[in-house]
Amino acid sequence: VQLQAYGGGLVQAGGSLRLSCVASGLSFDDYAIGWFRQVPGKVREAVACISRSGNYAYELDSVKGRFTSSRDNAQNTAYLQMNSLKPEDTAVYYCAAGYAPPSPRMGADEFRFWGQGTEVTVSS
Image (cartoon, rainbow, N blue to C red; front, side):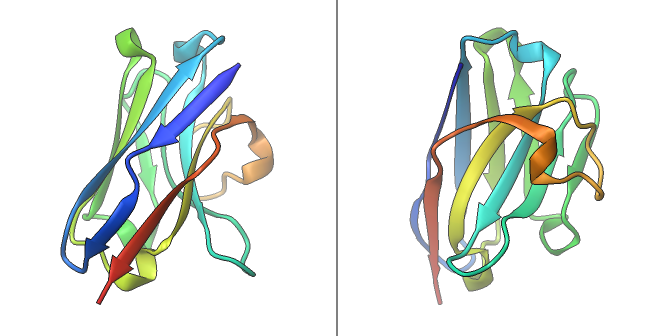
């Protein structure tokens, strides 16, 4: 099983990035896809999650209205569209596959497979 997250980079505040998560070696539509971020010295934070079908999603309050998760099961790919980026969004972003439904209570330990992370830096 492999998850590859890419699309990070350096962007000015107010800008946009779209992260992609490409999965292989698993039945993609059997899993919810979560997006997490981590800053050195801090706990990994759940940012968003999209259900297996793509019909349900969760976003962290601080990104609601700015970040949108989506997926294309035919392409085994999930996306995190990030708009109106802020310096506090700077982190390494990870995608993960798990059985946890999209929920504010979901935790990293509920996700079985993880991508390698892609770095997002937002300059002020």
